[in-house]
Image (cartoon, rainbow, N blue to C red; front, top):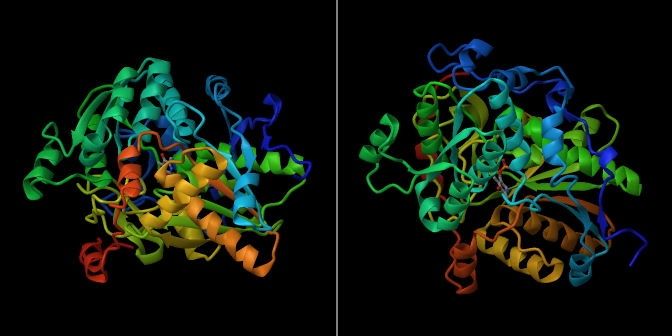
Amino acid sequence: MENIPYKTYLAENEVPEAWYNLRADMRNKPAPLLMPSTGKPCAAKDLEPVFCAELVRQELDVTTAFFEIPGPIRDFYRMFRPSPLVRAYFLEKALGTPAKIYYKFEGNNTSGSHKLNSAIAQAYYAKQQDLRGVTTETGAGQWGTALSMACAFFGLDCRVFMVKCSYEQKPFRREVMRTYGANVTPSPSLTTQIGQKINCEHPGTTGSLGCAISEAVEAAVSTPGYRYVLGSVLNQVLLHQSIIGLEAHAAFKKLGVKPDIIIGCAGGGSNLGGLIAPFMGEKLRGENDYRIVAVEPASCPSFTRGRYAYDYCDTGRICPLAKMYTLGSDFIPSASHAGGLRYHGMSSTLSELYDQQLMEAVSVRQTGVFEAAQYFARTEGILPAPESSHAIRAAIDEAIKCRAAGEAKTILFGLTGTGYFDMTAYQAFNDHLMRDYVPSDAELEASLAKLPTIG
Ligand SMILES: *Cc1c(COP(=O)(O)O)cnc(C)c1O
């Protein structure tokens, strides 16, 4: 092996003290959120009944490049950050590739994913504003877990609407959230008006993130002292997640290595947006070039088969409209698709970058994803989350291309989390019962036909 440490940690004084707002370096800014009632761009006063005031400020700021990370958030980060940047020597060797593969591992905390980076920030700002509690949705459960940990830390109430199929498939996730004091309701529920309506229109539905968001927003705006928080998609979340990319960037600098290809899985785009932030910043400023690849499930292909248009962020159509790559807010991915990456839309920042062809996207099928997950577990030792394994699949595919071409490229991918709560999906894979589901053009057309006619 070469003389490079297997894992690269930054020293404490090298951990970033500010988050980086990629939008500041974008010449064409992401399109603004629009109010569904008027079709006009959202102002702070429109968003503040729903979100914490400081988070609204971060959401709307497209010019400030750096936001200092408040001391209490930095203190919390020190419990699990810096996260390791790992050279995947064993994976490289098993693949027989000349490529150098690195991954940034975000699963090294109890929530098991990168979501804690933003959860702790959002809980902090809610506490600063003297709120009583927050509501949210969770799909696979990682966001709800991260938020319940963050709320426990700052003494806030936490109400989680969990997509019904996950609630049933992942009972232990629910118990972790309850252990941290959260109140967990399967969505669509009968506790909100929108939940009742969705249950009525789609009897027996297994739910979707879009439904759960509508319920969580309704619960927040109808409960005094509460606000709603979201674990992905929004610009504020990408801002907090920039800690991943900033650390990776600093660690590579220390190593004297420059990645050629940067790969991340894309659900709502927060880990990918965070991982690529400083690298994309260099690309936008013309200082460096990188190939940047978003990986999405073939069962929920927002980038590769969606449309770049204004759409509702939630099924109940009560949230602001966002311009993004979308499959339509009515789109509900097959329940046979494991866990996360089920959102119909995509971060508006990443959507704009993709539209400008500053990044690429690929879609991968579920069985191929689990093959990659198993291969990674057996070579590198970490049992990856199914979401993260989308990035592993693409990284392996790129490394195999390097083998064929005899090219020693440097690949960085985001290993966003661990898969201990995804054993039902692993079981289906191990029993050869897992199926690939790819929506037909007709299915996608049906939900895209209902896009609003704005913008
Ligand atoms: C939530 C989650 C994702 C996808 O969300 P993004 O906002 O696209 O990052 C990916 N991996 C893990 C482990 C997650 O928990």
